[in-house]
Image 1 (tube, rainbow, N blue to C red):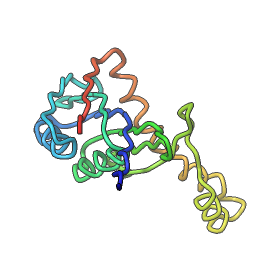
Image 2: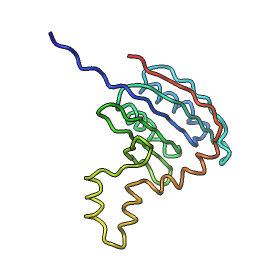
Image 3: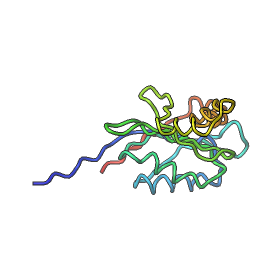
Image 4: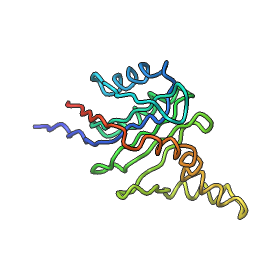
Length: 169
């Protein structure tokens, strides 16, 4: 008798820190497509920009869903967002950040939320950087520029409502 492997489930968050109003329904449709279920987002005005909106929600689904959510939103260059995926048995946690000026960045996450630079990436940094540029390359690997650009948008939404979504397979 053969037993099908169990699907690894995890949770995460999607933070849309800023989106033009016209893109809001498109973002919802993209997320629905990935999650395979209707998504109702509670959009709030983003105080840092006229005609910009923000939303956040928690999701639950198969490991790898975070990458699919980030990929589904990365084509909209004007959108600032973060997608997190919590660690699950056998899978590291991850965070994808996107800004209009920098594009998308992926970081692995430790259990406490710290960014982790894996061995291969660290070796590539060491190979590509001379002593004067080592700090810049490590900052790039950690996503420091993405955090600096997103921080004002993150804090502008303190106290914003969160919607929890779970995919049941």
